[in-house]
Length: 313
Image (cartoon, rainbow, N blue to C red):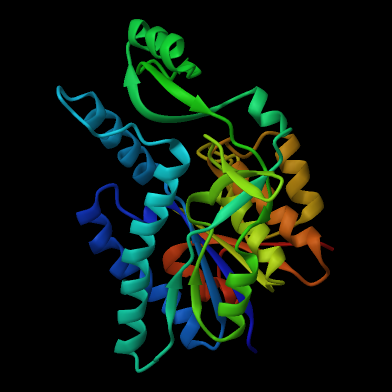
Protein backbone atom coordinates (compact mmCIF):
# COMPACT_ATOMS: atom_id res chain seq x y z
CA UNK A 1 0.00 0.00 0.00
CA UNK A 2 1.43 3.36 -1.07
CA UNK A 3 1.59 5.87 1.77
CA UNK A 4 2.58 9.50 1.88
CA UNK A 5 5.12 9.94 4.67
CA UNK A 6 6.77 13.05 6.11
CA UNK A 7 10.04 12.11 7.80
CA UNK A 8 11.43 14.57 10.36
CA UNK A 9 15.14 13.93 10.84
CA UNK A 10 16.64 14.59 14.27
CA UNK A 11 20.00 16.22 14.95
CA UNK A 12 21.70 12.82 15.28
CA UNK A 13 21.14 12.26 11.54
CA UNK A 14 23.39 15.22 10.67
CA UNK A 15 26.88 16.23 11.72
CA UNK A 16 28.12 19.31 13.53
CA UNK A 17 30.69 20.15 10.84
CA UNK A 18 30.43 20.01 7.02
CA UNK A 19 32.93 17.13 6.90
CA UNK A 20 31.12 15.11 9.57
CA UNK A 21 27.75 15.78 7.95
CA UNK A 22 28.97 14.68 4.53
CA UNK A 23 29.81 11.27 6.00
CA UNK A 24 26.74 10.92 8.22
CA UNK A 25 24.20 11.65 5.48
CA UNK A 26 25.35 8.54 3.59
CA UNK A 27 23.99 6.45 6.46
CA UNK A 28 20.96 8.71 6.87
CA UNK A 29 20.02 8.15 3.21
CA UNK A 30 19.76 4.35 3.54
CA UNK A 31 16.65 4.07 5.79
CA UNK A 32 15.00 6.92 3.86
CA UNK A 33 15.53 5.06 0.58
CA UNK A 34 14.26 1.88 2.27
CA UNK A 35 10.92 3.67 2.69
CA UNK A 36 10.96 4.93 -0.91
CA UNK A 37 11.92 1.49 -2.26
CA UNK A 38 8.92 0.03 -0.40
CA UNK A 39 6.67 2.20 -2.60
CA UNK A 40 6.04 5.14 -0.26
CA UNK A 41 6.02 8.84 -1.19
CA UNK A 42 8.57 10.41 1.15
CA UNK A 43 9.01 14.07 2.09
CA UNK A 44 11.97 14.96 4.31
CA UNK A 45 12.27 17.65 6.98
CA UNK A 46 15.25 18.18 9.29
CA UNK A 47 16.68 20.18 12.17
CA UNK A 48 19.53 22.69 11.84
CA UNK A 49 20.52 23.60 15.42
CA UNK A 50 24.30 23.06 15.26
CA UNK A 51 24.53 24.21 11.63
CA UNK A 52 22.70 27.52 11.95
CA UNK A 53 24.61 28.27 15.16
CA UNK A 54 27.91 27.56 13.37
CA UNK A 55 27.01 29.86 10.45
CA UNK A 56 25.77 32.62 12.75
CA UNK A 57 28.92 32.46 14.88
CA UNK A 58 31.26 32.35 11.86
CA UNK A 59 29.68 35.42 10.30
CA UNK A 60 29.67 37.23 13.64
CA UNK A 61 33.36 36.48 14.24
CA UNK A 62 34.31 37.41 10.67
CA UNK A 63 32.58 40.79 11.02
CA UNK A 64 34.59 41.56 14.19
CA UNK A 65 38.03 40.98 12.65
CA UNK A 66 40.20 44.07 12.30
CA UNK A 67 39.69 45.70 8.92
CA UNK A 68 36.87 43.30 8.08
CA UNK A 69 34.32 44.24 5.45
CA UNK A 70 32.22 41.15 6.22
CA UNK A 71 28.77 42.21 7.39
CA UNK A 72 26.96 40.59 10.28
CA UNK A 73 24.42 38.17 8.88
CA UNK A 74 20.80 38.45 10.06
CA UNK A 75 19.46 35.26 11.63
CA UNK A 76 16.83 34.46 8.94
CA UNK A 77 19.59 34.56 6.31
CA UNK A 78 21.70 32.20 8.43
CA UNK A 79 18.70 29.84 8.48
CA UNK A 80 18.45 30.02 4.69
CA UNK A 81 22.17 29.23 4.37
CA UNK A 82 21.81 26.20 6.64
CA UNK A 83 18.83 24.92 4.62
CA UNK A 84 20.89 25.18 1.45
CA UNK A 85 23.98 23.41 2.66
CA UNK A 86 22.19 20.67 4.59
CA UNK A 87 19.88 20.13 1.60
CA UNK A 88 22.86 19.93 -0.75
CA UNK A 89 24.41 17.13 1.30
CA UNK A 90 21.13 15.29 1.90
CA UNK A 91 19.81 15.41 -1.65
CA UNK A 92 23.10 14.13 -3.09
CA UNK A 93 23.30 11.27 -0.56
CA UNK A 94 19.68 10.24 -1.21
CA UNK A 95 20.11 10.54 -4.99
CA UNK A 96 23.23 8.34 -4.89
CA UNK A 97 21.52 5.70 -2.72
CA UNK A 98 18.49 5.67 -5.05
CA UNK A 99 20.69 5.23 -8.14
CA UNK A 100 22.69 2.47 -6.38
CA UNK A 101 19.39 0.57 -6.10
CA UNK A 102 18.37 1.24 -9.69
CA UNK A 103 15.79 3.90 -8.77
CA UNK A 104 15.89 6.98 -10.99
CA UNK A 105 13.82 9.37 -8.84
CA UNK A 106 14.55 13.13 -8.78
CA UNK A 107 15.48 14.67 -5.41
CA UNK A 108 15.20 18.40 -4.68
CA UNK A 109 15.62 20.78 -1.75
CA UNK A 110 13.17 23.67 -1.47
CA UNK A 111 14.41 26.67 0.51
CA UNK A 112 11.29 27.08 2.61
CA UNK A 113 9.78 30.04 4.43
CA UNK A 114 7.40 29.22 7.25
CA UNK A 115 4.82 31.87 8.09
CA UNK A 116 4.30 32.71 11.76
CA UNK A 117 1.88 35.07 13.49
CA UNK A 118 3.51 38.40 14.35
CA UNK A 119 1.33 38.40 17.49
CA UNK A 120 2.48 34.95 18.62
CA UNK A 121 3.11 35.19 22.41
CA UNK A 122 6.52 33.57 21.84
CA UNK A 123 7.78 36.95 20.61
CA UNK A 124 7.20 38.34 24.11
CA UNK A 125 9.11 35.47 25.74
CA UNK A 126 12.23 34.43 23.76
CA UNK A 127 13.53 31.07 25.03
CA UNK A 128 15.61 29.48 22.26
CA UNK A 129 19.38 29.91 22.82
CA UNK A 130 21.53 30.45 19.72
CA UNK A 131 25.16 31.20 18.95
CA UNK A 132 28.16 31.67 21.22
CA UNK A 133 28.55 31.88 24.99
CA UNK A 134 29.47 35.25 26.52
CA UNK A 135 30.49 36.60 29.90
CA UNK A 136 27.93 38.65 31.80
CA UNK A 137 29.79 41.84 30.88
CA UNK A 138 29.87 40.94 27.17
CA UNK A 139 26.19 39.97 27.30
CA UNK A 140 25.22 43.34 28.79
CA UNK A 141 27.17 45.15 26.07
CA UNK A 142 25.44 43.14 23.31
CA UNK A 143 22.04 43.80 24.87
CA UNK A 144 22.76 47.56 24.96
CA UNK A 145 24.36 47.85 21.51
CA UNK A 146 22.22 45.46 19.47
CA UNK A 147 19.08 45.00 21.51
CA UNK A 148 19.70 41.26 21.89
CA UNK A 149 17.97 39.44 24.73
CA UNK A 150 20.69 37.57 26.62
CA UNK A 151 20.08 34.82 29.18
CA UNK A 152 22.31 32.67 31.35
CA UNK A 153 22.50 29.13 29.95
CA UNK A 154 23.02 26.22 32.38
CA UNK A 155 25.99 27.80 34.15
CA UNK A 156 28.04 27.92 30.94
CA UNK A 157 27.70 31.63 30.28
CA UNK A 158 25.23 33.97 28.60
CA UNK A 159 23.71 33.38 25.16
CA UNK A 160 21.39 35.25 22.89
CA UNK A 161 17.83 33.89 22.99
CA UNK A 162 15.24 34.22 20.25
CA UNK A 163 11.51 33.42 20.07
CA UNK A 164 10.18 30.02 18.99
CA UNK A 165 6.78 30.77 17.40
CA UNK A 166 4.25 28.19 16.17
CA UNK A 167 4.11 27.68 12.38
CA UNK A 168 0.93 28.94 10.71
CA UNK A 169 1.56 28.15 7.02
CA UNK A 170 4.30 27.28 4.52
CA UNK A 171 4.95 29.91 1.85
CA UNK A 172 6.25 27.43 -0.76
CA UNK A 173 3.58 24.78 -0.14
CA UNK A 174 2.31 24.79 -3.74
CA UNK A 175 5.85 24.23 -5.05
CA UNK A 176 6.36 21.35 -2.63
CA UNK A 177 2.94 19.85 -3.54
CA UNK A 178 3.68 20.02 -7.26
CA UNK A 179 7.04 18.28 -6.85
CA UNK A 180 5.59 15.57 -4.59
CA UNK A 181 2.60 14.99 -6.92
CA UNK A 182 5.05 14.51 -9.80
CA UNK A 183 7.00 11.79 -8.00
CA UNK A 184 9.93 13.82 -6.72
CA UNK A 185 11.55 13.33 -3.32
CA UNK A 186 11.46 16.73 -1.59
CA UNK A 187 13.50 18.13 1.31
CA UNK A 188 11.58 21.02 2.87
CA UNK A 189 11.02 23.13 6.04
CA UNK A 190 14.70 22.60 6.92
CA UNK A 191 15.47 23.64 10.47
CA UNK A 192 11.78 24.40 10.97
CA UNK A 193 11.82 26.76 7.98
CA UNK A 194 12.89 30.39 7.71
CA UNK A 195 10.47 32.23 10.04
CA UNK A 196 8.65 35.04 8.26
CA UNK A 197 5.67 37.29 8.97
CA UNK A 198 3.27 38.69 6.39
CA UNK A 199 3.19 42.44 5.73
CA UNK A 200 0.89 43.07 2.79
CA UNK A 201 2.38 41.13 -0.11
CA UNK A 202 5.78 40.92 1.59
CA UNK A 203 7.25 38.13 3.68
CA UNK A 204 9.62 39.59 6.28
CA UNK A 205 12.21 37.38 7.98
CA UNK A 206 12.24 37.51 11.78
CA UNK A 207 15.00 36.44 14.21
CA UNK A 208 13.38 33.29 15.57
CA UNK A 209 13.65 29.50 15.49
CA UNK A 210 10.65 27.34 14.63
CA UNK A 211 10.71 23.89 16.21
CA UNK A 212 11.35 21.44 13.37
CA UNK A 213 8.85 18.92 14.78
CA UNK A 214 6.01 21.48 14.60
CA UNK A 215 7.09 22.60 11.11
CA UNK A 216 7.19 18.95 9.99
CA UNK A 217 3.69 18.45 11.38
CA UNK A 218 2.44 21.53 9.51
CA UNK A 219 3.80 20.40 6.12
CA UNK A 220 2.46 16.89 6.78
CA UNK A 221 -1.03 18.36 7.26
CA UNK A 222 -0.71 20.57 4.17
CA UNK A 223 0.40 17.64 1.99
CA UNK A 224 -2.35 15.38 3.40
CA UNK A 225 0.24 12.82 4.52
CA UNK A 226 -0.79 9.47 5.97
CA UNK A 227 2.15 9.29 8.37
CA UNK A 228 4.40 11.68 10.23
CA UNK A 229 7.57 9.92 11.32
CA UNK A 230 9.59 11.84 13.89
CA UNK A 231 13.06 10.36 14.14
CA UNK A 232 15.12 10.67 17.29
CA UNK A 233 17.98 8.99 19.15
CA UNK A 234 15.78 6.32 20.80
CA UNK A 235 13.67 3.52 19.33
CA UNK A 236 10.55 4.28 21.38
CA UNK A 237 9.00 6.87 23.67
CA UNK A 238 9.29 6.12 27.40
CA UNK A 239 7.53 7.23 30.54
CA UNK A 240 9.61 7.56 33.74
CA UNK A 241 12.60 7.86 31.42
CA UNK A 242 15.92 7.04 33.11
CA UNK A 243 14.23 5.84 36.31
CA UNK A 244 13.90 2.35 37.80
CA UNK A 245 10.28 2.12 36.65
CA UNK A 246 11.09 3.27 33.08
CA UNK A 247 8.56 1.91 30.57
CA UNK A 248 8.91 1.92 26.78
CA UNK A 249 5.66 2.44 24.85
CA UNK A 250 4.58 0.66 21.66
CA UNK A 251 1.37 2.60 21.16
CA UNK A 252 -0.22 5.75 22.53
CA UNK A 253 -3.68 7.16 22.05
CA UNK A 254 -3.93 10.94 21.93
CA UNK A 255 -5.68 10.91 25.33
CA UNK A 256 -2.93 8.79 26.90
CA UNK A 257 -0.22 11.02 25.42
CA UNK A 258 -1.92 14.18 26.70
CA UNK A 259 -2.21 12.62 30.16
CA UNK A 260 1.50 11.76 30.19
CA UNK A 261 2.34 15.34 29.14
CA UNK A 262 0.28 16.68 32.08
CA UNK A 263 2.20 14.33 34.39
CA UNK A 264 5.51 15.77 33.12
CA UNK A 265 6.95 12.61 31.56
CA UNK A 266 8.53 14.28 28.52
CA UNK A 267 11.44 16.72 28.66
CA UNK A 268 10.91 20.21 27.15
CA UNK A 269 13.20 20.80 24.17
CA UNK A 270 13.65 17.05 23.74
CA UNK A 271 10.80 14.49 23.66
CA UNK A 272 7.99 16.92 24.58
CA UNK A 273 7.76 18.78 21.22
CA UNK A 274 7.94 15.45 19.37
CA UNK A 275 4.98 14.04 21.29
CA UNK A 276 3.06 17.33 20.96
CA UNK A 277 3.62 17.40 17.18
CA UNK A 278 2.61 13.73 16.92
CA UNK A 279 -0.63 14.44 18.84
CA UNK A 280 -1.44 17.44 16.64
CA UNK A 281 -1.00 15.40 13.46
CA UNK A 282 -2.98 12.40 14.73
CA UNK A 283 -5.86 14.73 15.69
CA UNK A 284 -5.81 16.69 12.43
CA UNK A 285 -7.74 14.15 10.32
CA UNK A 286 -9.24 10.71 10.74
CA UNK A 287 -6.81 7.91 9.92
CA UNK A 288 -3.62 9.95 10.27
CA UNK A 289 -0.88 8.34 12.32
CA UNK A 290 2.36 9.55 13.86
CA UNK A 291 5.36 7.41 14.69
CA UNK A 292 8.32 8.27 16.92
CA UNK A 293 11.34 6.02 16.50
CA UNK A 294 15.04 5.98 15.60
CA UNK A 295 16.35 6.57 12.08
CA UNK A 296 17.58 2.98 11.75
CA UNK A 297 14.16 1.57 12.67
CA UNK A 298 11.98 3.78 10.43
CA UNK A 299 11.01 1.02 7.97
CA UNK A 300 10.33 -1.50 10.74
CA UNK A 301 8.28 1.15 12.54
CA UNK A 302 6.03 1.71 9.51
CA UNK A 303 5.60 -2.07 9.33
CA UNK A 304 4.37 -2.03 12.94
CA UNK A 305 7.37 -3.89 14.35
CA UNK A 306 8.80 -1.16 16.57
CA UNK A 307 8.62 2.53 17.53
CA UNK A 308 5.82 4.34 19.34
CA UNK A 309 2.65 4.79 17.28
CA UNK A 310 0.39 7.73 18.20
CA UNK A 311 -3.22 7.47 17.04
CA UNK A 312 -6.50 9.26 17.73
CA UNK A 313 -9.15 6.82 18.93
